[in-house]
Image 1 (cartoon, helix red, strand yellow):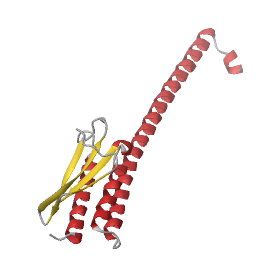
Image 2: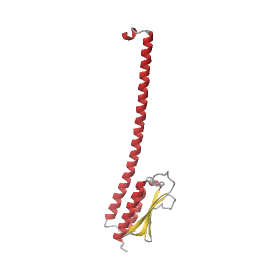
Image 3: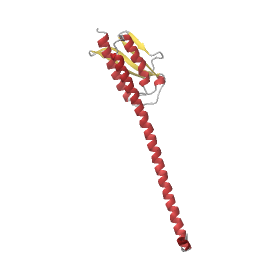
Image 4: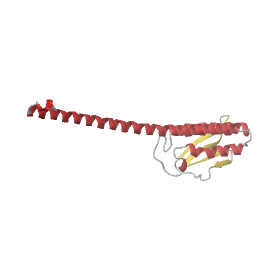
Length: 174
């Protein structure tokens, strides 16, 4: 305090003004750091959502492989179990439904109905179409990569269609 007592009024005013400016600068840097922290937190939340979607898709593929390898299941049981798995792997599982048609046989989730919001892949056996697999949303969803669907969901549906083709080939030879 003694140092301040030795200052003239003008020097004291300049000193207080400088302290005030320093304080405002610190507040601005603190606001900027807080904004950056909020941005980082939001980016991490978004990334976590994306990673959770990939985990659902990987779980679906793992379960499909288990179904494919289960020697105790017949053709219809395999296809039915796979169709039942599909909605849970999509971005909006509560609004998703699925169906597979193989030859003249249809397998569907209990709430399935055709809607304008549909993804479909052909089921091929030895290069020839044997049916299709599809996932529909029961309500319109926000636009994503491919309509309301994610690009990764399209890739997952292709993998599922290939697996169903392999099941057709091994379980129901033409």
